[in-house]
Length: 58
Image (tube, rainbow, N blue to C red; front, side, top):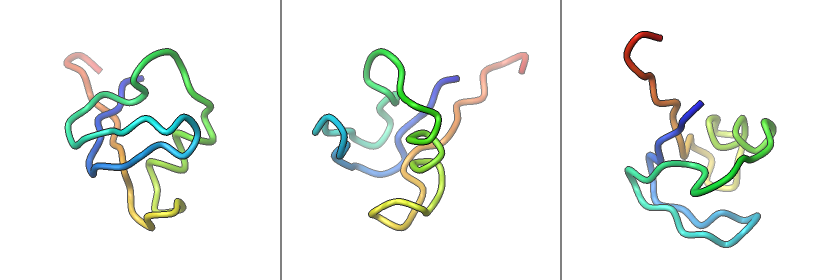
């Protein structure tokens, strides 16, 4: 799955700064629990920070 950043934020796990429109994660993989946290309002910002990118054909 690919994700797009909705709101600028600094990742608490690796201190990487993400800007609106960036791809998340920057490189590699991340844990499902972290993805779920960023997709929901259940994070420090209290709002979704990323969204799933729907690719053609899916």
